[in-house]
Length: 206
Image (tube, rainbow, N blue to C red; front, side):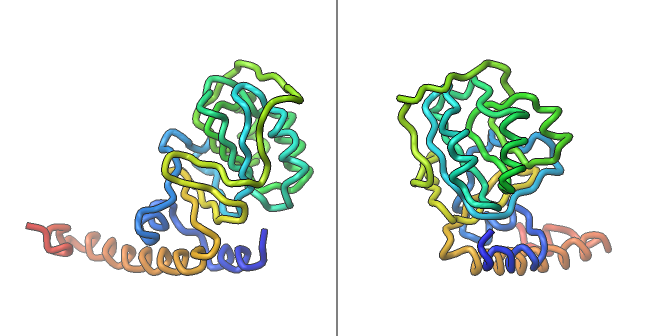
C-alpha cells in the first residue's frame, strides 16, 4: 500500500456511504458487487484487470503482477455466470500479500474464502468453471470501466458491507478527510436523535 494510503488508513475507518457522499457522489461500483461476508473491508490501491469472459488466466497473471497491498479490480466483460476465483487463487493472493479482490463476476469456494479472511467482493457466487486461454484478450494495470466509473491503477478502493467506491488517487486525501468530517457531524446528529429530537426539526424538513 502506498505510504500516503497507509496514513489515510491510520486515521480510522470510514463508511463507504460517507465517502461516496463526501466525494460528491462519484465512484460507486455496481450495487450488485458485495462482500462475501459483511465483516470484509477494503482500503488500498487499485490494480485494474480486464479478463475475457469465462476465462481466469489474466487473474492468475494479476496475482503476480500486482504489488503487495494492491486490490485487484476485475472486469469480466459482463459474463457474470462463472466462478473466476476460488480457494487456490486466494491462497496465492495471500502469499503475495495482496489487499483483496473486487470482481464484477462470480467466485466459488465461498465458505473457505470467508474462513481464511481474504476480503472478496463479487457480483455473485457461481460454481461454473472457467478456461485459461493463452490467446484470450485481457489487460493488467490499465484502466477498466464499470458503467460510469473508470478505475485507474493506484486509485483508492474502499469497501464495506454497503459496497465499493473508487476515488481517484489525486483526490483521495481530500475526500477521505471530508468523509471523516461528515461522520463526525452525523455522530452529533445521532446523539440529538437519541435524546428525542426529530429528524424533521434537525434537518429543517417540511
